[in-house]
Length: 227
Ligand code: PGA
Image 1 (cartoon, rainbow, N blue to C red):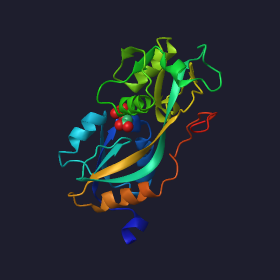
Image 2: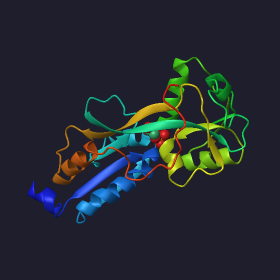
Image 3: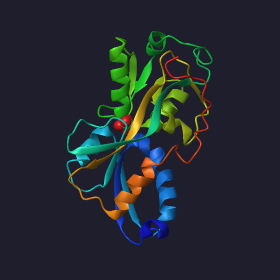
């Protein structure tokens, strides 16, 4: 309790986060660090599969996923929402239309993330459940590169709102596609066998009490979920 009031004097916190989380985790760490400026904080970034691979090492206090693996060795704490939005170039014929049928959007051409990406995994699962195929034009290993490829007119895509919020989304339009956005959540995962250090316990408490990302997304929100 005393440590919480004064800030932890020393300690180390290590996180491994999926690429989509790299847009907002630094903002959370910034806020957390203000309360505990003496902590040594490290974080690494990878796609979902890379972070899953890291869970078999005993290096990180927490892993951040929106599609955590089913692994009984991990304890999961759900924290913030993650919405995956349909995007197109600004002047695309679908831009500004209401209730675009999912099939019409999926006829693309679509730019998808690489194998191992949690974003791709979520999109594929969502479309499979609805028996809809994508018309894939290209596979690109980065959220930013997909954003720019969409801006340049190469195709449409679905990306996390965090990807669009930081670094801006001018040149893009967010489409009102039926049954989108895909709504998922962020999870803080930790190995049950790893002792919870005072720094990790503080961070867990901080994350549990979060209601929003401490930065406005700036995205006008025309969609009601599952409209
Ligand atoms: P990724 O991240 O697409 O970079 O793997 C998102 C996730 O795992 O949910």
